[in-house]
Length: 138
Image (cartoon, rainbow, N blue to C red; front, side):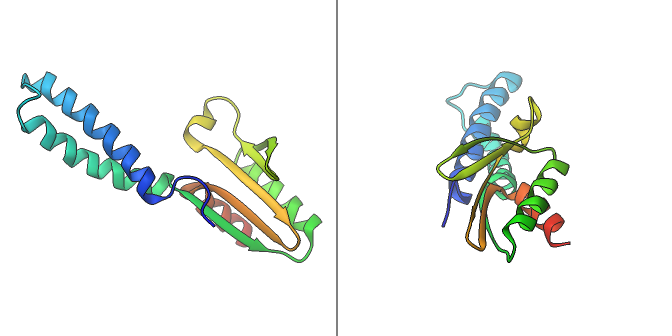
């Protein structure tokens, strides 16, 4: 089950944004017209790098964890998320939404948690899920 933008949607977002920004900046800095190919070559090159890095770290990932005791698991998860700076903010479609306060939220995104019978589904950015998994499983 994929929730949120996957690899390709995230890649496209970072690739197009960086390509356009670099092409415009390169044309201004180098004094070239946008009808010439050189600004676009720089833009596409840096756009590919930004797209790959952005997609690797910021794509949405779903983590499914099984547990035996709901109360113990929920407490462990809440403590782990609190250590990482996330606080519960709202509930949307049976998902509890955790996020960091103020500006820290801009760079870390949100964590969506759904706890059902014996199974938890956690959705967030790949980098956040990786850190969360390491902390829970250790």
